[in-house]
Length: 231
Image 1 (tube, rainbow, N blue to C red):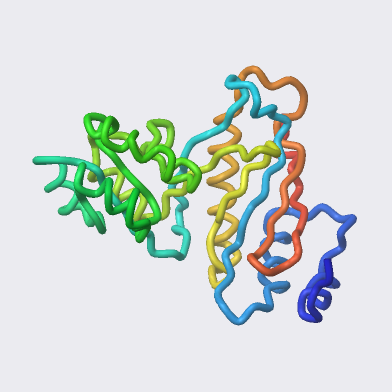
Image 2 (tube, helix red, strand yellow; image 1 turned 180 degrees about the vertical axis):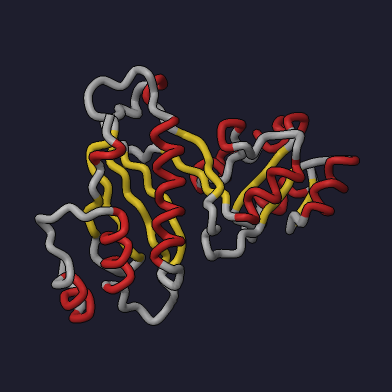
């Protein structure tokens, strides 16, 4: 894959054979960011899990102390008092059955996260085929199927992110924007790692976290010392 001049120059800042501390890695990611927009900084965590086994799945959510730097649009499936509560909490869209054709037939996806009260999951389940592949299906483990819609909406707006294994047993999560301070990015990263370490499945044999890379959207990857998180 041919890389642009800016990427090649940025990559020279990083020694590929080296493993950096969290603070050093965050500093290098910021330095190596050359795009004209405020890039997202992501952590890519390679695990020793085998996601084909249900008892080795990782899925959950964590509120980043400094948020994601992105405004998130929340859709809540609720009715009656819970719908009113969702609106009061600042949900961008609130509705029920009437939203199904809009999403299914009209391809309406002007939302980033979906929350549902448990009694609405029968309705939301009918959207599984369209919401599932986009990673938008509400899930109790991620706190998006709940009766406490106020907390769910507040947490998401404050910077709550979901994490889960992909097909290659890697977790990809945003930890903020390049415009964040190094301290903010480091604290967000530590919050993510604490949550993932806590979520370690008991069925794991051998190393749980194999390696960690931090990178901005368009920048080169920086390897982070994973020893403090290994187990």
